[in-house]
Length: 332
Image 1 (cartoon, rainbow, N blue to C red):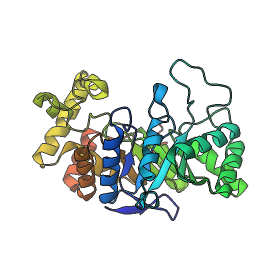
Image 2: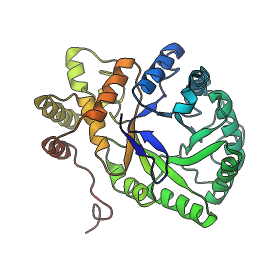
Image 3: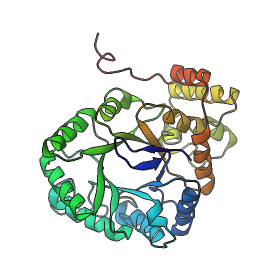
Image 4: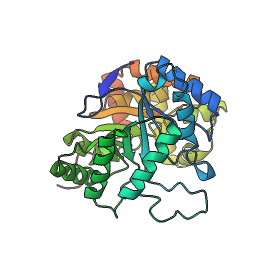
């Protein structure tokens, strides 16, 4: 496994991030534990979750599964860089949240941290991430709450998720005025098929020293050999979900076919190529992989060792061109 610093911090993390969103809804506790052990055995030390994972009436279940894994001991907690998120309400489906039980008020941040710590069965969270921007809460208030939690030892670093470039700038300029460390990472939608983050978010993250953590690196399975799996009649997501719906669009299908044909000529697995491409992108700490099985984890780990040739990289850029830099992409 390869490691890198998380943004401008001294924290060393693996180039792959283990996403746990499937733990509970799709993968039971025993299999989830096995995947986490396999991740540590492979050198993956960066685990990502969120307080709302488990979804519906089971929100918090994923954190509980991660917590029961860490509580097994054997140095598991000491080996893991643990990241979770705050923003959404924890009410069940159809239940309106009680006032101040969601978003990023100081009240909710304090409450949510304590609840996550209890579910995770740990005394601290390494990276506490804002799952979405809160347009109603000023950054001064957010940083006041975070500074207190850092002083209490409950969290070590703060990061953002799904924030625009100007949100990152606003957050870290406010933090600088307060003498706070500010955001150290941004978790955003970023993959070959969805490169809009390159226009503003990634440059802002680089400018302010944030590590970029890419979620949905296979774009809902579209970049994982979706057409080949459709043809072979395999793959749990073939013909359904985001990838199946997207392939109904003729232009998208032709684009993905060109992608798969390119990689087939070079003998490269599509899913591994999509992950390896992200690892070549400036500012990217690593993609989040959400394996449902140990085999899927092994494939993701292989991607770290995969070095794409200049010819392949050029071919990928031709098939999936980026938006170009800001403001040149939309100005003269």
